[in-house]
Image 1 (spheres, rainbow over the protein chains, first blue to last red):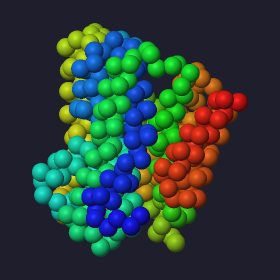
Image 2 (cartoon, each protein chain N blue to C red):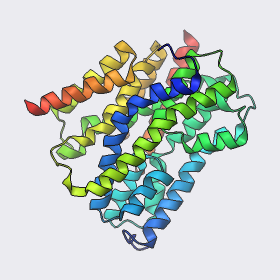
Image 3 (cartoon, chains in turn brown, orange):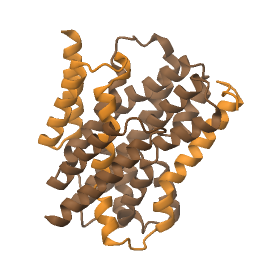
Image 4 (cartoon, helix red, strand yellow):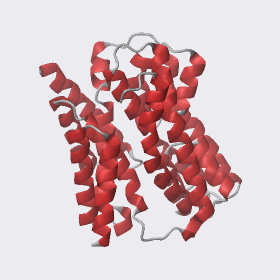
Length: 228
Length: 110
């Protein structure tokens, strides 16, 4: 990667994520329109919520005839990890102007977070403005690909062949983000605890098992770091 | 309490409420803390956010995929192992995705 301008670096590193966001959005669009949502509502979901896993949860629960308040709270629990992303990005972007932080918060999804967190660790000399430019660069391809994929899925509906293993776009995409993050024994220990705890806590309702598992994993990572 | 009318006003209510609350989860620290310094112990924990959340998010999806009714599936397990290994080895997210997707595609043809 020879590009030194942060915005273009962000675009270059976010661009390949089109390969992931389009199938993932396509899957949401197909499932939501099959559930009975009109195209405007399917697209509104992806534009207003921008959180794939939570959107899948919400549509599934609506199909299951669950009351609206429970739909919203359950889907929100899936998104509680965003609180941790928000806290984790503060040391890098906290000094940016409020309007920029407001926009960054809107676009702070798993992919832009993972790209930015990794880039800010590498590029210690970047100014706050450079970091904002990089973030904007990553979002420039990721967000339209997500909305565009959703639109295509809603428009195509059931014409997407059922044999395509589109369901695996989500796990593959998130798993691919994990590999490069395994930089030290502390990171590997945290990832291990995260998996073990989530599987042990599968019975905890409302997606809270993931939150408990993540807190335990962060504590283990921090403790291993402190001892090494 | 009654079910949400799919495609109607109830669905709009869910979309707007979920969108607003999700935005708050993303804004809460970034917007309200700003550039006030966070304590060292907290920063040490926050460095592990990515590896603490993402593996736990995907583990059940990989082990118990909904598409197979929750039964573990050899093709998906192998594709996941390839994705993680390539990502950790080459430190390249996209190469990892392509390797994993190619593995799953090949396994589907076999």
